[in-house]
Image (tube, rainbow, N blue to C red):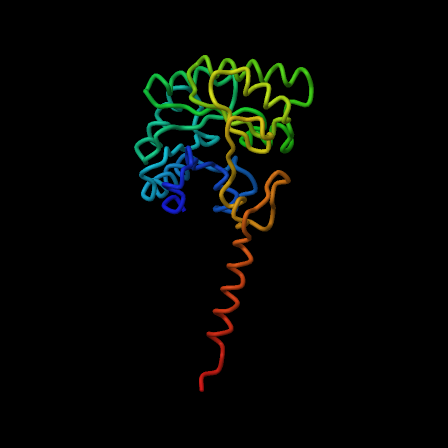
Length: 228
């Protein structure tokens, strides 16, 4: 997949911990480990040479800043040129520790999949004035710390656009409207490869799952057809 995507003009390719759901069959991303992320980042890196490759820090990656920096280094050694970290002001010490290692960091605000169990589900953020204020504080703090961009996931479009205008680094939206500076999607969602669940904000460009089913059925029919 990395080899197919490389060189198409994408600004970056993210090896996200969503692989836990669409590749490893987990119910959410909280069970993804750093070993999983290193393994998959290395695999994608073998096919990517032209596009910036970013690796996700998994839910178990940052019990403390020093460990997080070491895990970020593992992703870089696997082939990533930067890492992504979920969270706002509360993770600033961790982000600074990673940046001190000269490893670029992509922030992630809004709905945080790694905290889905704590929050009781996938909830849209920015619906209240207090939420919007907190998002702005977090975004400004991350930008000041030195992240090169911030993913905004499931943030109400007006708030996402406000954040995009307010901070000096690019925002990358996923389910947060067209007012962000860029957009990102899970590749399996974009290609219709995970038919069991499609987020409301995704409009698959093709339906690869049905094409796979058709190809396999055709193979079965041919293989079982009586030979003359």
